[in-house]
Image 1 (cartoon, rainbow over the protein chains, first blue to last red):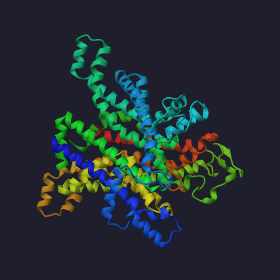
Image 2 (cartoon, rainbow over the protein chains, first blue to last red; image 1 turned 120 degrees about the vertical axis):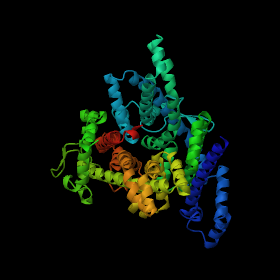
Image 3 (cartoon, each protein chain N blue to C red; image 1 turned 180 degrees about the vertical axis):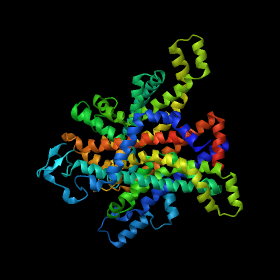
Length: 328
Length: 307
């Protein structure tokens, strides 16, 4: 366990360092930082003084180490577009993205698990076939199109729900939430449905497949033979045993939710991180993009590290397998 | 077992039996073929050549489906904000989408197969390096990888250089986000093949490792690659459409299904639904049909992969 954990931690550090290197290269070599700061009118002497003050004449390795130190201290530079420290900008936008992602996951789970169970139990019914076909279509539907169609129906034609923004939000210190106002909740419905739809179809199919598998096992037959009610067999015995892989997948899907939130935020002009990064790409806001890169790498590397370590702690076979793969 | 009986077994197998009885799979094939023909024959089939700037006609802008233009043109599917025939823009957009999707799948497959062959046959530090990178990349969603590669290269290049290269960058970004699957599955197949007698025999008679990899092992591991490529095509098309929709894909002047939806999105609130919904519907039809075909192909050719 020790060497496995060490190996995984080292790999995580390596990934984050690689992302930091790319981010540093972007920062340092895209455009001239001095030009960006002093403007066109500066004299050569002023520029040189600025270069020295910024440490741009130092060896590159030293500059990279300084970049790392600043990044660790939370100083990720100043956005070209907003003129505000990038770290602050990201922290401001984070609550909106997290709220959207969590709501989407909640919707996906709350709908996906019951529907999955139902389609497994009523495998031959017409409704179940229709659901499976719909879930197949759901996989092929691009997220942005789902959003547009929902906007067209519920905002443009019916006029029931807002099509953009977060509505009214309430601030708690640095955290803003839309969950406490009616407008905020209304604004959350369409984006979280859009984001959750794909995950819902995934969970539905997974729960269905797992349920079908479990329902064939001997202990289910035995439970039936013991004369337990259908409800007890299906929910207390079968469903419980399908939930372990389902919970794992839900955990792993957070990475995907995060990626797809970029799309949903663009469609609904949701003021979160995803919209911020798309705009920073379009405006060539290098510091923001660089900081985002490091942040994403760190978040994903930590998520995967946590998952791997948790797995290894639970199941020794995985530990052995991963080590073998790592050494191969 | 003779070829004929094998073929018969295959024909009678559950999956093929299902397929023959499944209108869904047959319709999927028909739709895919139809869309490919439309895209390939865009120049001949499309009523108007929308790639020609002269085809824009502001007077006829945003006409609903079935309208007639000022000069008596008929617009079966209406017109876009520049007064171009929607049917034609969608056909040309389809061509771009298939071109970008298809080429990125080809590149991803080529790179992935080569890396998988090399990693599996040679082993050692090269194998460890390639597979580590693959592992790490697999922990990030493909669309995020494509978006970040595309976004970073946009920032690195100046605007003029980028507009000229946008489509190439997009293709490479999508390819870079999909190579891992090929590399991993080819490598695992090579690990099995390389210990077989025919490889040992080739080695003994002094054939170079690269000739063994390419001429002896590759033909035996290429089957599953086709299946992965078929399934990936739908994904690559969706990725192109998504990135173009986000405004970081093909240049604004090129119609693709994604960029057409993006343009139409701006007119959604004026009630001009067809500008975004029609290219969107074609995109869904394409992705659904290719997806279903890919799934079917996977199950039919190689049941081992379906787990």
